Image (cartoon, rainbow, N blue to C red; front, side):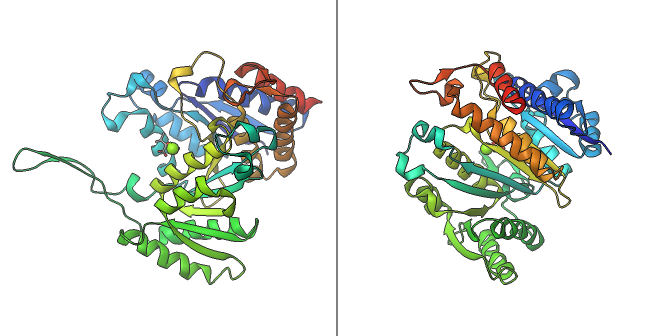
Length: 359
Ligand code: IPM
Ligand code: MG
């Protein structure tokens, strides 16, 4: 039976990069018998402009009915002064929580072709292959109470709550251990157990669950040290697992090790392998509409979609090797360009990947 993919371009460069990923999906559909249907929906600022909500009912319904979701990015200057409840980001956070996409997989892989594009020394990053497993539907992003209140002296006080139940920690721990089992069997759990009780519990649960995975070597690291180690000696890591906010920060840091945040895909999974796939970068309103954004992170997100939600490893590998072959030809968007390469735009990069698929 044909699988349904919800396509949600969102805002800013989301529109341009998703268009390239859709080219790739259409090529797989037309030339490689991938049995899919795609349907587009509005999310984020584009949805707010259309209906006053960053996550309209119709979009949520489409996402619920689909087997997988391909998302671009949300947000932009235009919507920054809106009430936080209707900001574009709420559309994304709403999808994550409504669909219970609690496990966010963010690989940071350095393509050898891009080793010199990293701001770090080649020796520090060459061969880098880290998987960050970020908890995505809990923690301080969603904890109650939250808000800004007015104190007796009329001063404002802002507050958010870092909160995790054992069951929430257990389920992300299982995903992390299982991910480590498929890789080099080393898992580093990142917390701030020296200061925050909530992450002391995190550590306790990780240790308990580790008994079910005796082959995996579990280590623990405080988040400040983890940030430092990521830029000092990133190759020490195999799989990292952490809370929602720490994962947000560390995954941007890990992304930059690979030369460009424009290269990194992500998958956000529920317990049944339904997933939402998106590049880890944002909507980059400063470069939107200029045909310069790098679509490779979104195209690589398609590979993750094929692998995890459609169980089609063969086509996932095919997409990944098409991306490699484009890099081997020296084709580069501006973010990964260095002297001697051929600079091309967003649209041409999408076409180049399709051409490599067909080659
Ligand atoms: C990410 C983004 C989001 C997050 C924003 C856009 C809400 O930074 O996916 O990393 O903070 O989770
Ligand atoms: Mg982020």
